[in-house]
Length: 275
Length: 286
Ligand SMILES: Nc1ncnc2c1ncn2[C@@H]1O[C@H](COP(=O)(O)OP(=O)(O)OP(=O)(O)O)[C@@H](O)[C@H]1O
Ligand SMILES: [Mg+2]
Image (cartoon, rainbow over all chains, first blue to last red; front, side):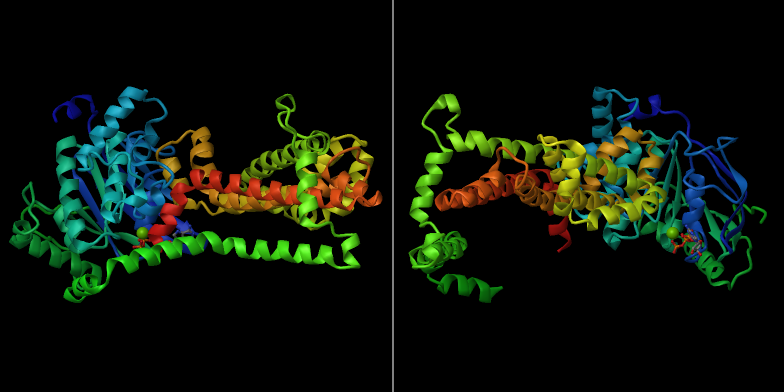
């Protein structure tokens, strides 16, 4: 599996500088300053309506901020940055039901990647998500979890330097969710890619994250950035029993409920970012 | 669980099989019942003293249809004289008009569907066009385009384009922003967006419109030939009636029915292929 890393470029970093977003008279995002370090998993949590989806849309160039800017590897983005790939929440609408799995995964590669290489990348990506042999199926012949794997494979086939996911596991069952969480961590380490995930699930945020960005409710700001130092590879049972996991989870929950003042979550390695 | 196995063991297998055969048999026979009744009614009408003058007996009509529309000569592609003189030109014009409508309806529908501003701009015009009764425009078309094949072709196209246009706009608008976001994030070239996202995404709706347009095009075909025509099935309807050739008149109706049925079967087959995925998706969500 080492051949992946040789042809991939380095993971990308993101900086969000004083991002705000106003929709008409609603101020969705007040001011967001944050870092997404290269090669790490950063998780965004926040109350519903905090503007998480909006923020991801801005980061991926689908929308423009009212003020502020996004730096992708240090330079301001114009449109969708090269090297960014996205996994959408609703696989049933993000995959194309009229294409077979292989064509869905190959679709973004049709421009600029020649056929044999395209084929190679599709198989490689499907293998990475554990779907080898399923390339001739249609998405609607698969379970929800498998479809979301296809969506992940499609993103991976682009050899992204930044993988952005908006509540990617919100519509799969708990067992599948756990599998896909482990899959994501494994892929992230193996392919050395920067990952930015939005989730509603606090356990998931701590389990996946190197950094958690906790957003306040709209008009939103960054309440706190929590550094999670849990060892990798993580384990669905053992990791979740560790004191740091338990502590971090409680802290995120208190922040979201507005019960905790932003403070050092884990005594030794918390990274405070000015709000 | 055990109840099921017990039930299965107790149930005598032959009866289940024979029931299935009976069901398959009845599903093949059922659709034929009403047509058979219609033919019987037709025959009964042709026997009656008064109507019998105008209603040719089914048997005569069948004989006449076969002799008029079929030929034993391979050189004529087995087409009888009337088929060559009237059926082929009719179908040719209908096909041309229909395809013109498909191209214009789908093309324009995609443009309007993708551009809400244009759609709003042209909406009154489109509604006007749709609500004009096309047969009433027949004179205008002859005035504008002379008396050859073109006014007929264009009349057919104009008459059937609306369901295609409306359905295409509807289908394109229904594709949704999620798919648009996928296209932008993955930087899909606009050609692929058009041919591999927009067109297939709108295809179920487009096909619904095209199916309506197909049967409508046969109607428009006949209407366009009722006046200022030298050939065609519509012309033949008028001509045979004027010459009190009632069996000839009825053959045209038979041929129209056959053509309609054949086209519909072809359409269903194409749709079954192209929209296999759509049936899969709908089946999954049921
Ligand atoms: N296109 C839009 N036009 C107007 N208002 C919008 C638009 N998109 C989002 N908003 C508003 O901006 C705010 C943030 O929405 P957003 O979808 O980003 O929240 P979110 O954090 O992703 O919520 P959730 O957790 O429920 O997904 C909401 O108040 C929403 O109503
Ligand atoms: Mg959201």
